[in-house]
Length: 499
Ligand SMILES: [Zn+2]
Image (tube, rainbow, N blue to C red; front, side):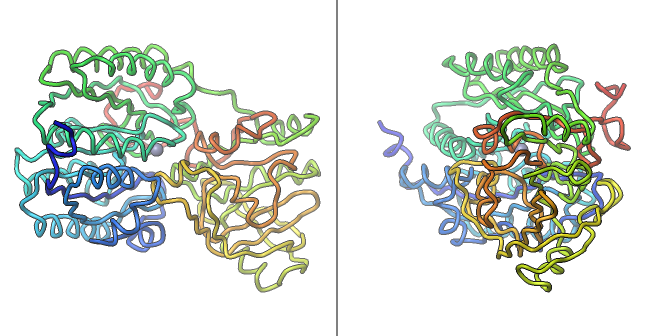
């Protein structure tokens, strides 16, 4: 019998709450931050997210093919930043639980979560969410959860869900595909084809964001082996979690979740094997970091650009401010021709808008939000263009679209030209996930000698295809690869590389 007919008419509740929380960052994440990115309730979840390349978009698509009766709750996703406020967390949770209670009875629940969300007073937000929804749907109703592979996973979360799966890629370009898979697994659970038995294994290890690319070691090795194991009949799915080192919790770090069909020992054996494999190779992933001045000098010597200067300590996708100006200072000091940087700086944007297109302005750029991201740089330049900061991504599947959809809103923007350097000033911090970010205002990425990207790995999908070279910089910022800079309190010790 086809999946379609066997489960047609099933009542499946669906929803999502996603946030990657940088617990060392001072700026909290409030309801307004969810509203600014993606916040939808009830039927609006289906109409808005259905055609998006998000995880929930994939779930909805497959569910409709199966003729399930979808019962939408809410979908909320905010840009990575500091702790989710207690008010925002309680509000999101009560919207989810109240709406789910109204959907009852349900045959299953599909959830999109991140895995590294931390709220004020709640270190394990995802497990707390699962506990609450489990209370409502009961122990026998299947719950399938799609996670970001940067999630930090507690045993409690694994216990509360039936099946956990995660993006297999970083940059995250398979969120939609994994959403389809989540629904496919739900269909198998509804048909009682799979009795999920899950194991979690964790190496005593932290991976800085810079080591979490899936095309590079160590994760490429783990994924290669995981794919072999996943091909076995008794293995339902494997989540290779890189963890998010900047969320300080007792279960922070990489982990492996293996789900089998009624084979608990097999699940345990494979989880342990993959966890050990990751531990053996974890040091292979860290790049060499140059000081910004050295990096800029090196980039200048290339015959053609763009050379990508990676400002991974100010990794916006990891929650940082996006206003670190170390690399800007280095480019200006060396009088670079055709260098580009994007800075989130609403104050500077406002000055440019007030001055108007074509005007000459002097302002302090960047370095304003906190003390972690360096000092402002005083610049004098001309306002080349102004924009509303809205663009459509060129890449259909990209890291940004995997959470929020493919229309990006950066707030008002200004292109300030200082000597030979292009500064794209944005009101809202926006990671470098798509070349349309620069192109929408008239900056041609291919014509640059060097481009600074505030990202650890996520920039690669858009920028590697045009890059003449990539140089990693040791800049100031809250996503530094040097984890000994962070005052951990909750982390389980000993752990590499801190102890
Ligand atoms: Zn992620």
